[in-house]
Image (cartoon, rainbow, N blue to C red; front, side, top):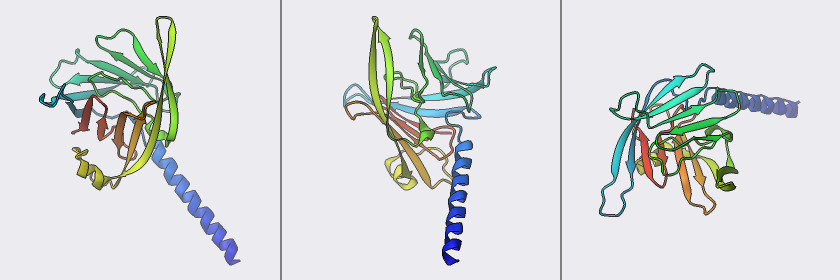
Length: 221
């Protein structure tokens, strides 16, 4: 009888944990802020004697007629017709198609894997597969040029990260009231170099900190 009660208790505990996890996932709409987001970016100098350049960005969300989300990136103070890029994500619950239009670059960059990187582009518009609990999954990016197809591979890992450590590193500038644990999503290339990393609050709609070889960025609102 005691063994049977223990099994029942264990089953109920497992079900409760499962419900909490499902609730967390259902409320996590990554990269879909309800209001505009402000970001402070710092760019590496060409050499040690060159001070880093900085830029404040405003990311404005819009709903499309088919319920997708369009994110428009503006340098702070620019007119609303002067977006540097537009990032579009498919509606929640549909296949994860992503497209990126960049001013000054022809065509769109697209992805259906949940990972879209824009190396060298100044706006912090990289999209990582945040909600997939990846522990070393490899993603492939295909690019066509001159009639040939080039493939690059990236490894994505997700791991818990302590708020205290993030504060020690200077990765937090936004309000974190009520948050104790964070999620660090890291993308490495075929050489093991970091291509991008983002620090998220569980269930957040936008990252708190992002880092690429070109820049470091903080959410500041």
